[in-house]
Amino acid sequence: MRRIWGSWTGRIGLVLVGGMTAAGVLSTVWTPYDPHVLLPSQRWKPISFTHPFGTDASGRDLFSLVISGAWTTARVVFLSTVIAAVIGMVLGILSAIAPRWIGEAMAHLIDVMIAIPALVLALVLVAGLGGSIVTISLAIGIAFGIVFARVIRVEAHKALTNDYIVAAHASGASTWRIAWRHVVPNIAPTIIVQLSLIAALTILTEAALSFLGLMPLATISWGRMLQDLQSTMTIHPLALVFPGIAVVLATLGFNLLGDGVREALDPQLKARGASAAIDPLLAPTAIGTDMP
Image 1 (cartoon, one colour):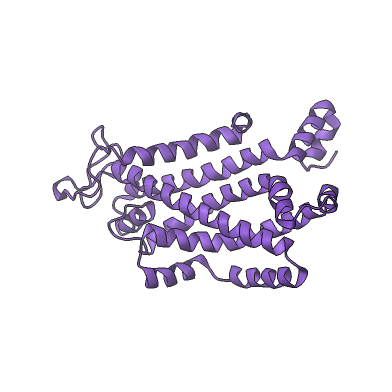
Image 2 (cartoon, helix red, strand yellow):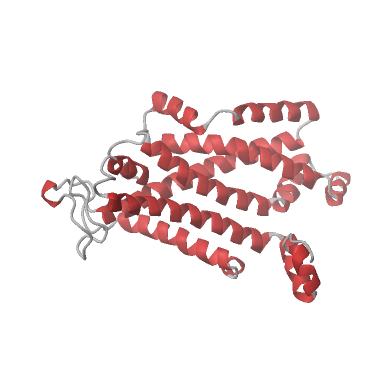
């Protein structure tokens, strides 16, 4: 954590992600107003101390809705990331360490499943299981987990070519032991970074699915807020800004956090930074620019 905080991207990412999570947890015990109660007499109140973001067409406090939507987003991100991690790790590593004909068959299966969009998968699951946070998280987790599996397979293949893997095989270690003790720790930085990117994409996907009406009406979400406010955006455009900014900041937070984690865990980036600090002539090469 200290290494992540040492980079500006890591600091900003931690602040944004921590702020979203804290707002979501806070909404479970307190909100300025009940976001489920409709108050027609309070409709379209302007920004004030009593209503920091104003109110919507139903008289609901937009600030209370935004922080309640953060809790929905946080739950979807957590569930989807866990599902994607399990699917990606199992399929990716299994296809890398399995016999060649099994591994190639699994790789082709992964390529076929990647072609299925998350929206189509979500529609199928919602039709069969009904709309809920679990259903949406399952659809997103499966869709991104398949893509994650392809990345893990490539990284695992690279790790299996190292000399210490050959030495482990020669010492009599089993394939599963090698995968757990050597392959997974070797590709851990890639796993963490990819999961942070999946979390960022999950926010956008959940907002899009909620906007399309796949989330239950009783569940408050940023996408649902955008859907409800779009019909009045020409009359009350400011109300639409706040849930939109929440989506952007949460997505940006996970992206920056992923960059911070990569900078903290990737030894090659550390080596390049150290070389650039010792020899200024290496700095342009380290950041990918040409020498004059």
